[in-house]
Image (cartoon, rainbow, N blue to C red; front, side):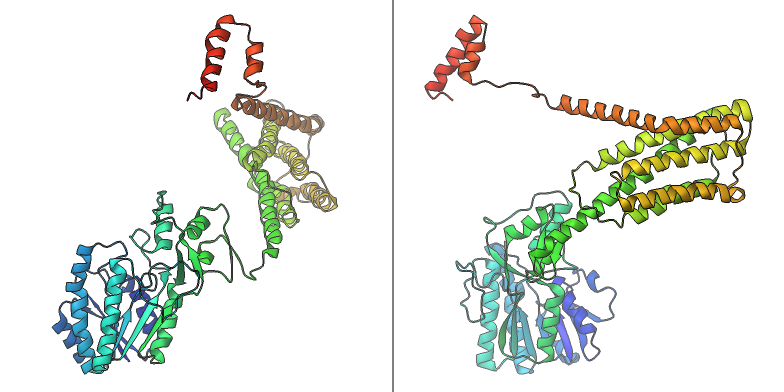
Length: 527
């Protein structure tokens, strides 16, 4: 079937064209003026005629030359907010040439398909019942009026000249390819405004009910209508479910928007969560899964941040003091595997459904910073002793690995407290694996034995490092609490009513010139 789409490069037209191109039994042609943007179809091999509907003789020639069987009319110069002057231009450039095209199609037995507007043709309605094709047309805009004029012309040509026609009244299409920064299409325009951080302009009070249909669904339905050769019919195309303007905007503005699978397509595409079984009974499970993800990420982030902080601090120390970095890469791999990678992976499988308290960053920092500073201090102490006393890089590496691993295990117990059976098995198992690996894999990890003095130093650092971690944590907590106290300017103040304040005042001038005068003005209704 040879099909000509007049205005086939627009939002709706390009989606229709793509659907028909996918079927080899159809030959698709489009008609667009020279200035029209056809970028939506740039990747498709099809014939494009550069002309306009006002050049009606050229359009007729295209129909005859290419043996067009179906003409799909998608052209309009108006939008819902167009003025009367725009309407007059629509008559000259679109409606009058279209009527002549209808006559030609009737004479040549060419089917004329017209895309009207289900969103404007019926006007406003006070009931919530869906529109049907037999409802009266009562447009309230020049855009809707022009659609009514075109439909009436088609019906007239059908009665007088047996024109084969199909009138399609789509609701409010939306989807891929729609201009986010245009003047029409609520869903697209709302998304565009939100992206630009601009207010969304709503005509009226936003309570108007509209039907939204996804553009690919529209294209598929239209494809079936053409393939089944539906003729001389007027058909509404929509989801069958009403949705107010305020509802669409509310879903976009909500922190977490939820839609039902049985609801509007617009709602489902905008919402953050879609309940596939249309059952709110699934919400507790969804909330729990969200809590599980956030809580486990918070704990894991603390462990990863420890390594980041102390690695940065040690790098700065080695730069400014000119010493060698106290770890070999293979040694850091052991620490990362036993203290961070493996335990955090296993512990994230735990069902942690605790309520989220909106202290994510503070919690992560207060867990990570004290442990990282403690590890840095211990390692720096070992570096000073080795540099001045032992002068052994192997001993330096060994002592640093042992102390760092011990502190990491302490941090694990802190981050994942309180310890249940599952957590104890993972943490103590990793602690055992760490120290066994340090002994068994000495050659691979380039570790060695420690002299007695270094053993004593390592033992002392392991003993006092948990105390240092707790001290730093408490210090940070006090600083944070003081900052909260400063933010609350009214903390500790006691408020009185007027009579209590008057009695409490010890300043006669204040009583006579402020309180009493103010009270009189209040009694007189002074504002």
